[in-house]
Image 1 (tube, rainbow, N blue to C red):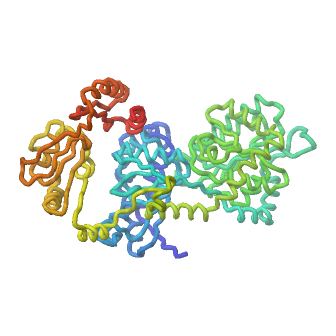
Image 2: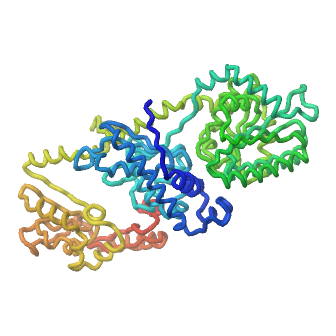
Image 3: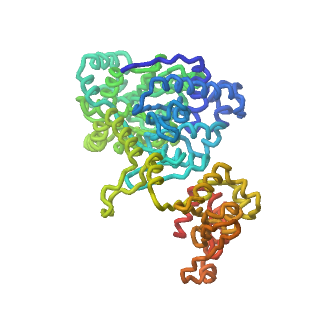
Length: 623
């Protein structure tokens, strides 16, 4: 592998400040207000006014730009760029918009782009509180594929794209889910990765794990202080967490304290081995968390000596051999994260216990972690419910061997089948699917996949030139004019000013196309024929289809000569309106932002200004 190091002068403000102190807590659902008022940052360092972190945002942009500038000269046609994580959210679009990244004058790219986020994505409401949220989203959707570890994170991203940027979501046969952006589908995928089973199983056989196990028993775990069954060693609850408040270590210790109080049979027989890792990327958070945790550990050990073995690692890491030794020894792996992305420790624990002489263990996982959704054999807990967590500790330690084996057997096939190589191959295959757009293999097969192929401009131009007759149908709003409240206002009361909505280059292109005797051009819209005439009155050779096609005005030779007709289809529209209007008004009353629109000869219910997801749900009631 060829590595190209990049040394940036913007790393401190762009990475340590903006990425770590603004994005990281926000993406873990810590609001901007909490970040400044709940001691997430240095006391008094920030206010809720995000403009004060403007320099950090500028550094973040510059940092992403440096990666773009380093990549462009070495990219070759057919390459794939894989962008990882929240530090580089602007990079996909920075690459896609670069002149060097385009093969032709249209949209063909030199390379394909994958973006994968390894931390949670916040709810769209919380993401809206980021001053530069729309820019971050616009940066990500420059990729071909956007990946997440959990469906919840993908759903939040899709909602944010729709609510902040107005991007319609697209879901078609073949499992393609994504958003429409710039005339293409940006695929959004959920792909899970596990651990390298062969590497871990080889390590479990080695002397290094055995040496680490001996050191753990000798130096970390205190001997039992009261009689245990069969003179067994102390039972162990184990945890390895980043030293940060969102790891929920303080809540864990409160629950453990309650566990020892309410379940006295375990006193002196159980030890909690807690490792806290300090990587020095969020120093203030680490220092506060460390102080709080050390105080709680001292309090519990004063009441129950030797019940907690607490170890801090300033290096920010615990070696694989040390982890595996701990996991083989631990009867329970205990996770109480308040917010957590994808941790691989529970996967390592499952393999360590499967290969160990002590038999299966039990994983207790926070319901706010990805682990709880991926490992069905884990006991899911709410870390804020301290009594319930204490009860879960008791249940895990008292669980019989058969149930432990059943729970482990549920998870082992999954743990062993998701190495990083397979995860990588699946995401690259997803990217190929985007580019192929799944061509129809058998038109007569109702189960065949039918999605549109990517438009090739060269092929289109060639076919256009060779054809003797062409028909072009163009949508209005969002295609040849923008969508928005100001546009709707003009269309409701059309005047000569409406023509300003159409960009001069678009108007010129329509004039050229419609003047060609071999080409018929129609503009299709749900608006009224009067609004379309106001827009295209000076383009008589453009046909108009209003009310979604119910009213048509055929192309004419001169301005003012175009006449419209209504396609009645034998329908009594007065009777239809009498029945439909009350139903639509009730639906509008239930859906804030929606409205009933008069469309000669019919009616329409528009939820354009409503919450997009709620509007779609309500629309299904009318379908």
